[in-house]
Length: 117
Length: 107
Image (cartoon, rainbow over all chains, first blue to last red; front, top):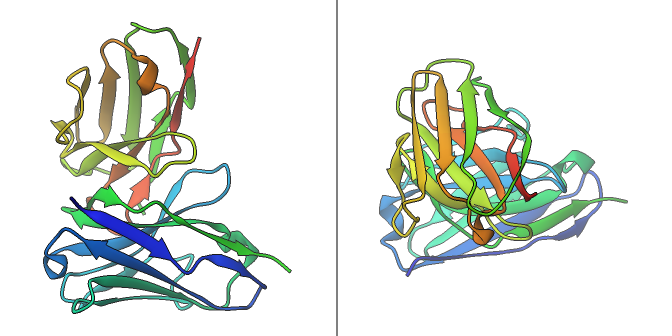
């Protein structure tokens, strides 16, 4: 059974930083692309970033490029999202998701990030 | 960027009704179209990928079709557990984009 468990969410001030992690089990982690998708309170889904299985390829939404960095540790089966220069509009539940053919076929339970002073 | 437009944004329906949701892409997305179901407070779940292929475990009352820029999701006979919000998503090109969602509510 595939399991994705996010951690690292919380309250942070505007301009601050936060690092999300996603621990994955039940799959051969290094053969799958992975992504982060977020959902602002009461809003729809927004793709944030993706990373290839090897970690060589990374992709970002324009709204986070230059501020967020996706990475992975295949030896620990863990996905990360380093979030810097956070803004109020980054407030959302952040989901990690396993990717197959650019489709999100397994999701974590989500981690809430709140950016507020 | 490819914009995904869903309609309607909400629909009220009764148990047993047939419900159809449409999704239009601003550019051709080939067969790279997926549908997700999300219930309140829960993560989304994949229902359909590759335009029309049901994810394992998804009931056969769900079906989907389409090509090019126009796609539909149909629930043939609405069940109590189907009341949720549904999203389409294109995987043809980055940035990956979602429709705005369709909330299926109890009539």
